[in-house]
Image (cartoon, rainbow, N blue to C red):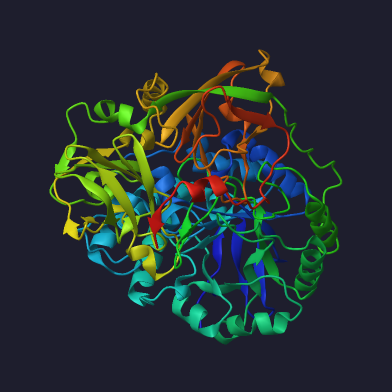
Length: 635
């Protein structure tokens, strides 16, 4: 079906397909790859060389990565391509290590990453945008992004002397409802024009004929993805319908699986995976292992699936051969042994796991509550609306917004209903905690208050949906009017937490400094900041990776030295400890801030404690009776 017979060649480099012999051809010689996925945006750039070196030492000759658009353009026309965002630097590091690169440029990536890599500033209640189609508003944003991105990538193509041998257009498009081939053709032309037809383009879809057919297009080689199996003839049958000749390719051979809050940690048996990999390589297939190193969803970057709505934890460990922290596992060595039967493997020693430190307990002090910060959040006054509006309508794309309404009359145990509150809302009247509203789960509660009291609703965006048709229904906040005793509430104040989503670390640090001042709020159930200072060795070489243990805390966000480490939800699990790379730590004094949303494990004479330990804990599921007992909600 696909016309990729032309030889992509430049100087003494070439990359193409020999259809007669069902193989890739690189520089005139038959070529197969064994690859592993690593996402540069989930690993600090300091560790890129370490992780890539370990992948090379396992016998891989290539690596695969997505490009996350929103990671590079968090706000419109605000581009980030340095430090942890240095995409070209990552590609050069892979080349220095001796690895080829398979690049998945999007614009959509899924990857259990917020909004599937799309920037959520595209969203508003009036945009009516249809993603992943020929929709002109959507294409305008996409074209502007690609005009920025593709020139950076062009020198990295294999034919231009770089490491990139293959470029994937879009991502598993056959799993999306639109099946808009005009859209896929638009992307293909855009990429070929920018790359002067020097890139080998391909697509990836689930291993069914319908999915591959919808995602495929002439001029791009169609590949598939699937997990462990013993019947590869059946698994590759769908690819063979679309590509009767050419190499077998599994672009996502799953080493593990993703997690959700409140569900058990998923694993794939190392022996079964190794056996299946052995059969796959014996079959002559090209394979990419997804993931080889999972990494971390720092900050607000985790994604969510729907329906039902389920958010992904901060850890993206994925039960991969290299852990979230880049440590070696038994699965790693079993994979290396299998690869050595089919590919040359360097005899050099494998780089060791990085040292982990146990820094012990840290006592935290209570700081400001959200109610103490309102004038700081909006010094010129709140945003005033008659009816509640989405966060994105006021340019708040990640994190939290507080909605406030002044009660016009006294109420006693009267019913507050919120049918479309996304995703989780913490309700109080003045300083009195009332309960939690949660999208698709808890829609109402009884509240009590006097005329003139303030109804405060802090809404948390837990993550934009990453996969499926509902990515088009992705606004956050209070999307439908609340009712109290069957009466629609009007006249609202909005306090978006803009500083917490800022890409400017100085802005975040200034906000956290204010948030750790003394509180006028006495309740421990109102969302509140807690802070402490931990002393580490003064010698930088003695500062190591660690994990922060959040046992007994409930749900919230962790910041270290102004860096948004990510979310915790100890009451749900399975993750209890968050990975702290040494790159966010400094010699000497380190500032730790927790934003606890529900209930801190401390009170009068009962200290607030977190512990820094040297081992992870991502496989524990807990149920918090404390959280259940403090809510009086309607389902």
